[in-house]
Structure formats: C-alpha cells, structure tokens
Length: 191
Image (cartoon, rainbow, N blue to C red; front, side, top):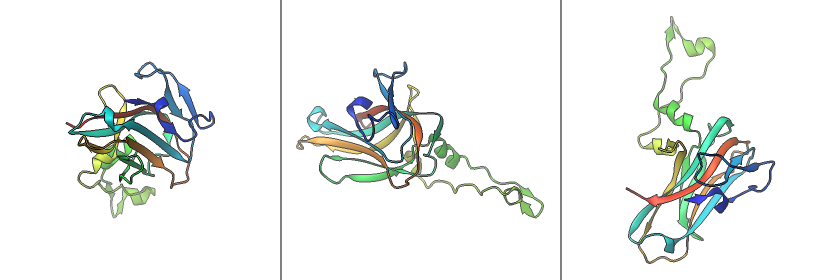
C-alpha cells in the first residue's frame, strides 16, 4: 500500500485544507484528514517493475469518513488507473458509503388516502434503484474497518516499463467537501 504521505494530494500541505494526523487504527504513522476543499485531487504512482508479471492488479483508495463528512453525497468522483503519461480508463464512483446503502434499500412511500405521504409532507421521492453492477461505484467496508473504493485494474504482462498511476478527482462540482481520512492507495492482485 502507498501511504497517504507517498501520494500527491493537491493542497495536501496547506493546513486550511488538509492536516496530517496519527490514528491508532492506521498501519502508517500519519494519515491525511480532509478539512475542506472544493478541488479534490489525489494521485499515486508505483514502478511497474515492483509488480509481479502476468498478474492482474486492482488499485483501491483506502479511507474513512468521519462523523459530519460532507460534500460527497451527490457529486461523483472520477477515478482511473493507467500507465503514467497515457490516457487510462476512467470511471465514476461515489465516496459516500451511505449513498450505496440508500440506493440498495429503497423505502417505498406509503399512501394516505388519495395522496402519497411524500407529496403530503413535501418530501422528495426516493432515488431510483442503482442499475445492476453499479454497487462497485460505492465504498465497501474492509475487514480492518476502513472503507475502500476501487480505482481500476491493471494487467502486468511483464513487457511494460514505467510507472502505474492511480487517481481520484472531484473538481467539476465546485462545491466544498470535507471529513475524509485517507490512509493510502492499495495495489493488490485480483482474485
């Protein structure tokens, strides 16, 4: 795993936006706590020569959301894994774990006479269910209690030199977000 200190985090050394803290449940001495940013950009690189040949790898951002985390519920992030300098496959993910639960377990509005309760109370209708396979767009809880979101996969056929680059970006929304603790990016063989 690449630690948060091994990553390039835009504004990572600006205490107004990020701070570096120690927490006992991390495998690293320091983790990055997101205070408040409108431009979220996290990048990591690893030499491809460090990866076993003829193996498919997956890269995952490993993080936690603190109580009161905000700005991640509706705006997706763009993630990718690619050879450094080349255009990689980009995907859209949500860093809000609760959104995945809301999408999977929809609550049907109850009817009150001729009116639905949501119309009667002025509430919004539920979010439509996620399409099949979309649950990998949401963070999953790991055995160590941290969350992870898949950034992408890479097959090392043994013939490629250079670096593998992983990224997480949410820069389009222009809204502020905070409350994540980033432990790092894990690169592991796919099972």
